Amino acid sequence: MPVKPKWQQIADHIRSQIESGELGPGDRLPSTAQLRDQYKVSTTVVRQAVLVLQTQGVVQGVHGLGVFVADQDETAGGS
Amino acid sequence: MPVKPKWQQIADHIRSQIESGELGPGDRLPSTAQLRDQYKVSTTVVRQAVLVLQTQGVVQGVHGLGVFVADQDETAGGS
DNA sequence: CTCTATTTGTACGTATGTATG
DNA sequence: TCATACATACGTACAAATAGA
Image (cartoon, each protein chain N blue to C red):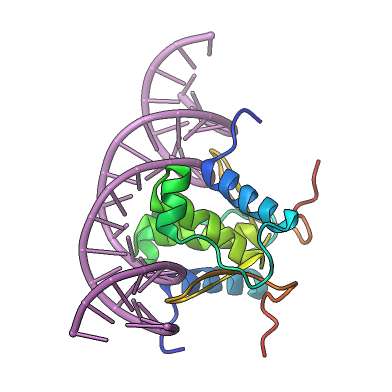
């Protein structure tokens, strides 16, 4: 495992912030543009990281608002 | 639920094939180019669908070979 | 209600790298 | 070395939703 993909590094970093308590449940993540500037990558990479975190239920993206940290098991709770 | 995104439709279709038995464990999915032609979409959409399925542990992509259907929960069962 | 700004979501296209055969 | 095929990465346009003025 020589190098880790950028999207994975970002996803891992965000998740670390959540576990560290820097980002609490219900807290909003920086916008795509913010993360893009912060990590100096393209939109695709940021979106990739966020997409994976969403699939894993770590965060939840709200259209027009932002991406928020999931409470706990607020994954696919349906309805 | 007006319309479902294309990547979700493809991911759902592939998953249906697995549940239907059309695609068995260890079986290889059509290549990105094949799926691209089959669904008439771009590479991004196909990769998006595959990425989500991989994150969910439904399939597993092998670099240089192809994408294969996971056995059961062969997700991250690390060694 | 309309207009505007912000932000996520979807979608297309392309280039390069890496791994298998 | 060459062909095939996934993986990573960059850039852009448009659509849809939310919020504030």
